[in-house]
Length: 451
Image (cartoon, rainbow, N blue to C red):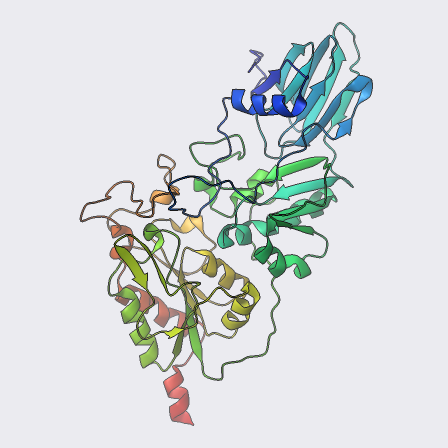
């Protein structure tokens, strides 16, 4: 890696001085970079011993897709990329918005790669060494170009949170945008966003030679290669706005609403499971107390988790006893149709809460391992101000995706998971009462009494 000492240099880049095997050398550039590789880009937990290949990762084209003068090739896939033929070259990468020089070098052949992979309005300039005018002088211009925005995870909440920013990006730059994501999410959103192209992963992409591409994700270990601001400082969803350089204000994605009601009685949907124990509500009485209270009011309580039981080794989390079993690996649209006719939703900081957000139903969210800034806004966000909390959003702590019992400070002590253990059933019931008051919801049992 080479870095200029120029006082205007604010971001490092790499130059790899060989072009004999472009695909191989691109890999060498990534290995040689001091930037953290994008390996931790998911909020899910995998308890298997090894780290399986990510089926949602879409690799960049092996050589730059744009042809420049004198055999030079360039593009903006995974940052600015320039591939130089043999010659005597002087290369400069700039930020066109600020005119800051990001990188400058002399090279005889090979790759010049920016170390920053998020949206920057790059300007690329290449001179024959000693000449006054550049032979390549190109500023990023996305209008009318093919652009890939990659969603390299299969997790529900992440993609729901990020999708509106991809639409903002397309509108801002008037480009053709391809989104790569899991099939279940693509099926949910495709009809609602006809101006975007959805490619279902794993599978083939539509744009084989995109002009530019950007990867969305949650990047850990102080990664500043794929994100300009650590996501833990701005929120799980808003980080996509900063990565893509668009308005970071939150917005729920569009889903198909207006389905016919299938359950006559009034009901509440709950989701009690997540992908690691830290994300659960670890108060042993909480869910039972809440379900009992809702049933006293006359509600049917429908548990809509994917699985009725989730756990690992000696700890298993079961569906609340008196809730009705509506669990199952069902199409997401069916979940939307069930939630949209509920009076409200109660869940954790997990995917089904994000899906409920799309239906515009009032949501009670219970979480202690995240801080309220992490998720979308709801006035019924339940957390405890007592004890340890917010480890997920601590920039000095890195979530371990492969440890189901992750608790960075108090694991294997009697204080483990106190962030949610200290959230009581009474506390959540208080939020239910406030929600019902705010929305003028009467108890279903009182409706029956009037009849």
